[in-house]
Amino acid sequence: MCANMIHSLRQFSDTPVLVYCDDEAKLELENYIGNENNIEIKETNCGIKNYNEYGSDNFVELCFKRIEHLITELENSNEDFVMIDTDVAFAGDPTGHLELVQKLSDYDFVFQTDQPVGSTICNGFFYIRNNQKTIEFFKKFLILSKSFRENEKTIKNKEIHDQYLMNQILVNNHPQGRELNSMVKWSLFPVTFATNGHLYFSVNETFGSELVVHCNFCVGEKIKIERLKSKNLWFMGDDDE
Image: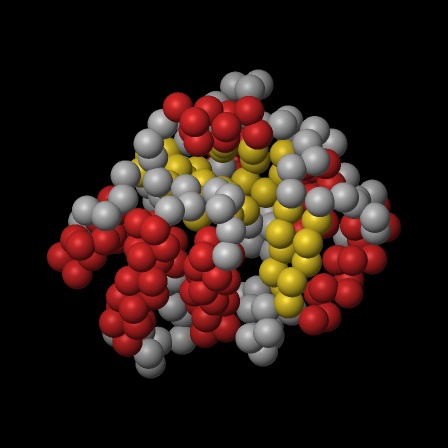
């Protein structure tokens, strides 16, 4: 899925891409992307395996591990970042819209949304302005996550991942997260630009202007590939499933 995300982006833009993955996936991804320019692949070095099952301990652990990696990258760069899930595909060049957000707004975060039937904030496509304020936000975010996750310690299917916590803090103004809520200014991308899997695939509510398509609202690589193929957003061929 990650290789397809990169290949779809490369149809329209050569903007730099940074990928974190485990050792095994790193070798596989390097084989898929070949000599693509402006792509850096780093190992997570976290030892988390079998993380694809939604709600599992490893799934949740990896969700917060990527926040740790994000903090590291923000601290060692002057660039803004866009966090992208691997089941995102690009139908056009998103960089123009992102540059408008960067230059003409004062938002610290801008999120794709899973509305009207899902959560307000989706971390699947997520712009982050690089400044000290957002770095401190994420550090406090990780500290707060430990308190929230303690309540699910004995539950097998967990719901408290990074996206859940982000909604609790920014949308629901949870009492424990009010300091973080006051630290940043945020908004949502219009679904005419960045859409979700419910709108684009499940109910076929499209506008023709979508440049970012998140293939969520379905579980499993097979159905995700089928859906992407149905909209000509699968770029890996039949042999690379």
